[in-house]
Image (cartoon, rainbow, N blue to C red):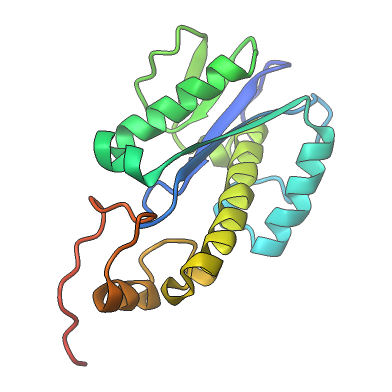
Amino acid sequence: MSLDVPEGACGIDEVGRGALAGPLVAAAVILPPAFSHPLLRDSKLLTALQRERVETAIREAATAVEVVEVSPQDIDRRGVGWANRWAFEELMRRVPAPLYLVDGNLRLDAGRPHRCIPGGDRLVGAISAASIVAKVHRDHLMVELDRLHPRFGWRRNKGYGSRDHLDALREIGPVALHRTTFVHLEPRLPL
């Protein structure tokens, strides 16, 4: 990681922003100053098995870990931008820290000292850790939800717009776990 982080700073990141189904999940993590792990990086750069391994190490070492979810219904009602801001601000209310380091470039109204860092999940260990914790949490949730609606393939696609997910949406339509404002289907043309 390439940015200096003050001791006790809290990293915050989200996953699931662009998914068609399931919640947006955000996490906050405070790592001890000496924490290092060879797999600590942006969750998108890791395999599922690697994320599981480092997530366990993060939870064992962290001085704070918190996760929040925003439902598909709230995302449909208020928008994904609102969901992202609300999740980050809620994490700031729940996790006391001298500084919050947030992935992205959002306008937050948290009343707490924070820095938004575009690409922060690749630059700051605490943000990478939050990315990993949020991703593992959401992936586990989508595997559980797949048991309720196996036709959508959420075990594999985690609610994103994969071909099997889109085919199932065309066949049977959305369920309550879909973000209806995100589901815009056009008939599939033969190849």
